Amino acid sequence: MNVFKAAGLAFLMPFFIMSCSVISQQIRKESMAPVNFKILVQETDKYLGNTVILGGYILETQNLADKSSIKVLQAPLGFGETPKSRDDSEGRFIISHKGFLDPEIYSKNRKVTVAGIIVGTAVEKVDHFAQSYLKIESREIHLWPKEEDYLMPYYYDPWYYPYPYYRHPYPYYP
Image (cartoon, rainbow, N blue to C red; front, side):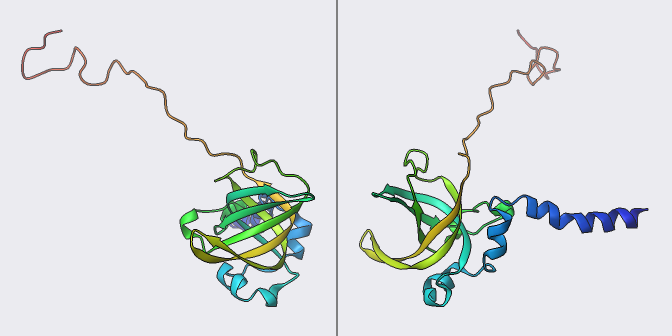
């Protein structure tokens, strides 16, 4: 009986994993297999016109006359295509999105996952250093909810040491 449970679980596991994706199934089928981000930036001409799924942390959002531009610090994608730690970043990319994206919502340090078409590279200055950005035209964007620190409220435990019935080696004075 355990063999049947294991076989059923092994059969259903890919469906559970695929259902956790934030990018639609149609676009996932059309996208290319994951490629190292540094290779995408260095060999952009080789991948022009291909759909990729990338993620990271928003650095800046700007709105132009007919489109929005989001600068993103790339981060590897984890389970459910959520961006992992920004410390593992391999560069930056720019998302071009037709229409208006509110800079207050798409604000600095928010996590984003995007499926888009590679359209080229751009070189922009970061402080005094020229940085290459991968340029992507978005097909789908998923903005992750804000991660807010939750502080546990103070909890008073009357039985936590020292309580009045604890046997001290010396006399206890309440």
